[in-house]
Length: 483
Image (tube, rainbow, N blue to C red; front, side, top):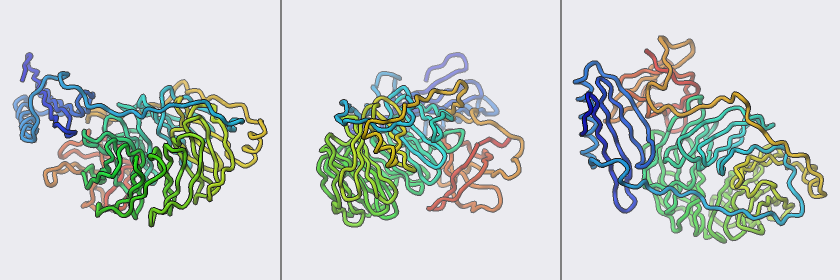
């Protein structure tokens, strides 16, 4: 421990060989204030600041925190001497399209960095890029807001009307409120490739072909290692978790009870999609394959002309769409007959989603592209008639939201507004949980709540809570600390 006047800092690291933990923990005491910074080695990490009544109590609290970490295997270290764990960024190439016609693109928004994440709902389009930016737009392309996250966005997933962004810093951020927060913190040895969330349970696929399942309280439930590595697909529903890797697709029981089926695919899986009774695997060998969720049997194959980077369907799987490594987008009927192939005009589609006769793509040049996929527009495009692409520009005063990294980042109120809900941080079985104080809620249920702003005994006001399957509440709206 080094001392400069009244300021002292202890820096610890826990780094295990063979792909284990790789993280740091730093405690700084400055008079009556204790600041804790923690995260993956090499990253900025998260920060929590607490002020105590006296200097002595601040030092005692700091010593307790350090002691707890040392007992868990952390050891003193020199910051910067140990290299950060490598994060895999998907390496893709994109060739020019061989299609004779270009897709009827209505509008295009350039995010400024390679983009993988996309989600489209009734009200908004979401796109996340490698710079850590997540933008929301309306369906006509007007940019509504920006979320500035600490690291590159791997993917965007939705669970009902909650939106989550999985990032290279190992955290999954809830973007459903104005104040984004880290809802899940994935272990340092998990090199995230893709994510899915179903009823609050997070499913993570990684570079080594592992599947890691984490509950709504950010606690590890179970994990499995599939037969293949580079697992770019994970999808989940009530009956199974579907894990796609370079040797095919494997389905596991949702409770971790074991493998349900395994199906080799024609080429390594690069992307996955699901409908009610089938999963769709886009592969490196130029096909999308539809697999039965019940048996794993291959029900249909959709042939493309280059490796498939992404795929999607219209409701019920009536139409199947695919994006390849040669900047083309395809449409097939349910049985596998190719209906059309068109160039994107903006690189290869790394992810896609269909909604209301529009196909939304995120591409290798970092664009969110809206394609008119109606029969009339496609027919005109095949004859060479397409609309003039409208390039969307950022608004001059765009609302920007960043995650809270300390309790001081949350606004405060003297009393709970009418209709708001009060929650409280409580110690329970050695962990800091959040329960509801207001009437009309089950006080035994936990609340999914930002860990970065939890303090023992602190009370917070939230706009609304919604019950989720599995017996917990999710926050909807702003979070304010109650004085």
